[in-house]
Length: 368
Image 1 (cartoon, rainbow, N blue to C red):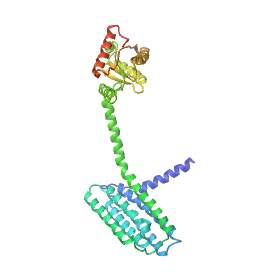
Image 2 (image 1 turned 90 degrees about the vertical axis):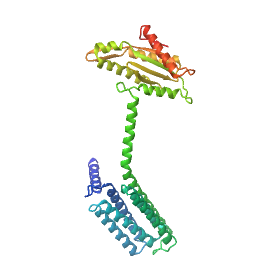
Image 3 (image 1 turned 45 degrees about the horizontal axis):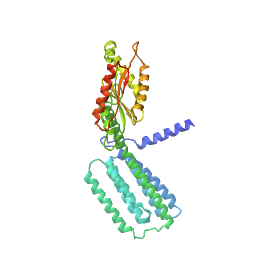
Image 4 (image 1 turned 180 degrees about the vertical axis):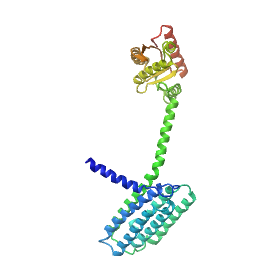
């Protein structure tokens, strides 16, 4: 089974490589030629379907007509490997227009072959860069041509009259082929722009993350914290929450004794616990230096104190190791409930004052 799959993938790979073969002129994009080749293959399958459909129903002349255009489009396919993109595109458009006119003459308006002009319209706008005036002129030409065909063949009697059933069958075949051709054009020509747009979105997301994130700890930074608090205190979105400002005890002593690299490990270890514990709408940010800001959204002061006590207990039980050195750290916490009667800065000041009160009382405690 695997051998068959590998063989099938190899065959499809060779076919794709053949269709996607580059053109001789390196100054031109091969994408329009690849699209034309796929359209020609789709159209040749369309001719084959029509030949089998028409063989038992219509005269030898119509069958020869389909065979002739089948040969012409096969010739165009070969031409796409030898000529420039512009030459292939021009000949393809001429061939399609002549074929549409001939079908309308022989089989009439009701089978819907005139809608292939839409394929040429879409192809003309995607296949070439710049030349906007030429594109608009060609679009006007195709619109005029369709109106002319309507005037000539809508009420006209075709050379070969089909039954309603046969006309409906050919209408379905034409519709499926037209949608296939439009899908090929849209898919291939949109890939580049979609890829570029995806990269742009990813790049903007990365920039936004960098602008809102503290690079050392991975927590949100002070700017993002202020933005989040303002979203909670807006006129239309007032949401109860508690603010905690906390500080690593004796952090300067850690830096002086073990070095700043060890101090960075301490910051990252503490931040990792905040990451795990501050879930849902709760929020953690590095406020500055060894200070952190925690927001407990939708919590009363008692509920926030319970959550904060669990965080404090986990941090106190954590040992930080680096270079054979192992130490534990503690934090002091100032917790306050946001007061809707005052502005945001008042709550931040209140939390900060409680933090320093905790330091004066001996550190490693929650003041609320």
